[in-house]
Image 1 (cartoon, rainbow, N blue to C red):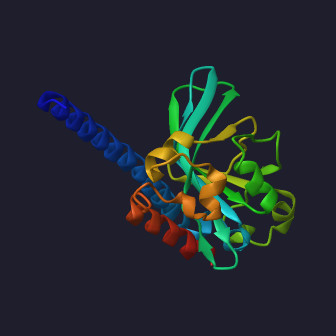
Image 2 (spheres, rainbow, N blue to C red; image 1 turned 180 degrees about the horizontal axis):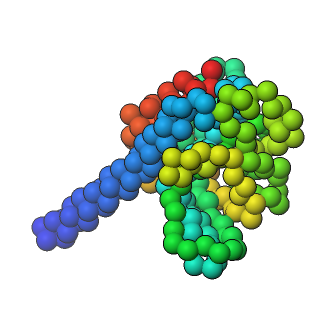
Length: 235
């Protein structure tokens, strides 16, 4: 092997490693933003997701910084994460990555950034979110969730809906209809973050295969912070 070829090989390996580090950092930032958005939403109990709903939740997805809007024909696109609760241990799974896209029609001008939260109330809702592609309104019962302490006695919605959906924009927080939207698992983000190709179902199940090629989860601090936030508000 020539010295020139060896130098070229080492340079390629270094470049690939640098790209991987940057990619993992981008996904870690997504985890941090999701934790921050959920914390900010729950910091005002009078306007947040009712505690009784969170106590009964089986999974939570947060899609921060979703862009919604357009001229005449609107649409929205966002990237987020999903974790599932383990009832036996009382802990939450590592985050699985997902994307949300959809379209809407009406008199819309400009664009708006909002945070979305999906609270999954039963196993059927989890199964739907773990599909490679899940169309809201077509595959499951999704309802705009009740907000604030005054809504804690509203059990009818909890019993009927598989998933409760919420949005926050410009300081306003409310239940939101996402019919027509599609949620897909973000396999590319999973691979960048965990160092190998993983399906969302494998990640949230806590199988040993959810660790990266080094044997460790990427950005453990971000993951720990996310899981702590979920535990804090769902007990």
